[in-house]
Amino acid sequence: MNTPTRLLFFSCLSLLILLGFRLRPIPQTIADTTPALPLSSDLWVATDGLGRTLPTAAETGAPRAKHVGIFYFLWHGEYAVKGGVYDISKLRRANPKSPKFGPEGAFHWWGEPEIGYYRADDPWVIRRNLQLLTDAGIDFLFLDVTNRDTYLPTVRKLCDVSLQMRGEGIPTPAIVFITYTKTAETVGDLFTHFYTLKQYEPLWFRWQGKPLILSNRAEVTDPTQRDFFTYRYSWAWTPAETVAHHWQWIDDTPQNYGWDTNPAVPEQIPVAVAGHPIRNIGKSYAQGRQARIDKNALTPQTSAGRYVGEQWKRALTVNPQLVMVTGWNEWMAQRFVARPDAKGNTTDFLGMKADSGQSYFVDLYNEEFNRDIEPMKGGYGDAYYYQLVANVRRFKGLTPIASVGPKAGIKVDGAFGDWAAVTPRYRDWPGDVAHRNWPGADKKTTYTNRTGRNDFIEARTAFDEKQVFFWVKTYKPLTKPGPNWLLLLIDTDGKKSTGWQGYDLVVNRSVTSATQTTVQRWQNGRWQAPAPISYRAAGYQLELALPRTLFGTGAPHFDFHWVDNVPLTNGLTPFFTNGDSAPDRRFNYRFVGR
Image (cartoon, rainbow, N blue to C red):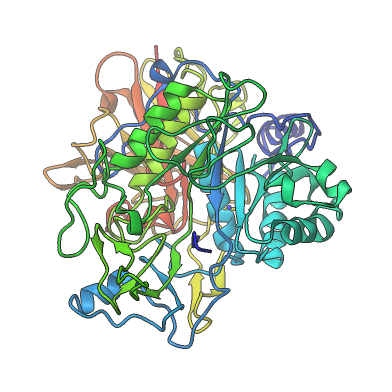
């Protein structure tokens, strides 16, 4: 954002119970304040690409009624220019001394998103983003309409996908708008063309009995519009400590909090991933100074999240009702050219005065100077996403993972009835195997992805004295066995440093018959010879059994991950965009036996 501008079951009864448990639509109730969404990933663990492990309930404490919103942008593909996509980072690498930027005023991308230079109205992108944010525990998106453009066609597309996902049982984030330029006109447009239509009312985020809008109420003169919303003024570096109802979207560390009626009671606080390149506050800024940048305007700490770490530390100390995170997917900024003012001064950029005629960008520039959490292609990848997940957990709390005793009576026979009472039930969202076919931001590129196949929705695990059992269910009937079919990866020792990407066992890499598959152990840098095990698959379900000797001594304690139609050849990166994973991305399910 320019500051100067996601078979039937055992019996009919079991089917109804399970579908009701897993796929019940989200209730669309109206409350004074939208209830905080419970974390759907309590049973999930992960180690990110930097080796950082997500906190568990022992660290976070019990669940608390807290809210987290995130800045979400809608402009990708709206301002295409003749030259196509201008990627600042790629242009700098191609010509470090004189990057061939696009025209003055043209929008440039600071880097490439993990899923390409997308249009914000791509339904595949929308579903994916909403799912990632749901997994992270985000309660609402505050949609950027600060530059007067409301992007309502894209807003409606986003809301349509979100409502569809809620109908599938996925508790997607609610919607808030943040305005700034020509606030009265913008609020009027939103009221007339969005809020009065009512069809998206289930997605409104309510605060103090009304839909929340981040706007300056003093600029809104229409009495109906003034009364319809709960207003909070949101801009950068405003006097939140002395003026009520200032919810800043960014502030320098230590951030001031917003308050309602009592200045001693925090209502909201902002958390930003970085500041601005014109203020020389990048992702590595910490303890009051920006780390030294190299010739590529990066630092050794660019991936580590030092600035946002300090901001979250402050937020957790203040412990308000609500945190607003900046942000998810800004990605673009306009190119400006430095020109001396009347005194011969030019703008600051990357810690120095820009030379006359030098290109500069206000809000973002490259991997170091941006405020995006959405995973990037290459670079730090999804490091900032998992830092977000970790801190939302610390803020909102988690339910502890319960230990499970031995279970007798599981028979790998294809009847599946003895799984009915097994807990815990590990969830995975339906719908994330949809295929992609949509233009990119430059309208010349079409992005396609047809790797979605078997759509996991639930998994369970049990054990007895001799075996450990696994069961998985999909949204639609299973495909026939083939390459990379329903792979089960198991981390038996809890060590990321051992195994293939931390996984010590793989099942189903070689399925030999309708009743026999294989398990392989990773050893000496490769998968060892397959050993036969029993399995059954029918309709929507698969079950199998593994010898307990594969899990060491004592009660089984392990992490596991199902993945379909993704080869185990290029690390974990293909898990992020292809086929289906249960759970998503780097996450694993944790099983604790006793």
